[in-house]
Structure formats: C-alpha cells, structure tokens
Image 1 (cartoon, rainbow, N blue to C red):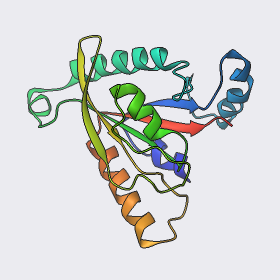
Image 2: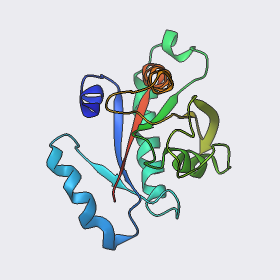
Image 3: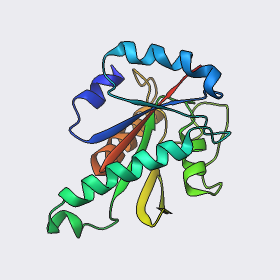
Image 4: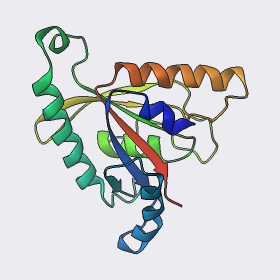
Length: 171
C-alpha cells in the first residue's frame, strides 16, 4: 500500500488533496480523513492556485522546525533543505511543482508517465530558501521496468528530502 510507504517513513510530511475547485469541493476532501492517517490535509487546486498560499505557509512552518532541529553535519549537506512532491500518477505533482517554482519547468500532460526522473529546483518563498523536487507517479505495483525505475527515483527523492508533500487526487 502506498500509504504504508509514508507511514513507515520517519520524515515530516504534509498531506495535500489536489484538484479541488474552491470551497464547494471541500466535502470531497473529507473522505480522505477517513483513512485515519492524516492529522491535517491541505486542500488545493494547483492549476488555479486555490489553497496554494496556505500550503506554502504550512511548508515554510514545517521547514523552519526542521531547519531548527538540524545539527551542523546535516546543515552542511549539499542542497540545503529539500521538499519532495510525491504521489500516484496524474494527481497534479508537476502542476504543483510549477506553481511553487513560479515557472513551467516540469512537463504537465494528462498521459500518465510524463515525469520519469526527479526534477529539482531551488525556490524561495517569503525569504525561505528550499529545494523542491518533482517526482514521477508511484504505482501500487509497478508493471514495467520504467515503472520500477520511476519508483526507485521516488524512493531516492523521499530519502533525500527533509519534508514530503504527499499529493492525492481529490476527484
């Protein structure tokens, strides 16, 4: 189960329900609380920008706590603080990555599998620097060698990240 992957990981994470269009769609996001896993979910539409300011505020708050708790050896690691955007195929990870970076750096396509490698980009929001990492979609059971390579890239991104932004499709 993909949620077990997150449960068994000791990293900080943020749960994000994407593709929700405004307050009218909040009821759709409520179903995700029944999983009993999320302390809090942030509801967004990466495409329109709905909820993204709240997400970024929460990202920064968590990054400040993470950065404060780091020791000097961790602090000197190359790349600084890193946030990995992770989830199943076509949940809007690349759209969210582009929204956070303020650029169209990741390819967004309705065809699953457009993102295969990790895309890293240094980002600054409200004076806080961090690296955002776009990843390919995780399949429950990878069926092809390409799916397995994508999964390996996602695992590396999660391992290297200080914070995981787990994105689910709210539709």
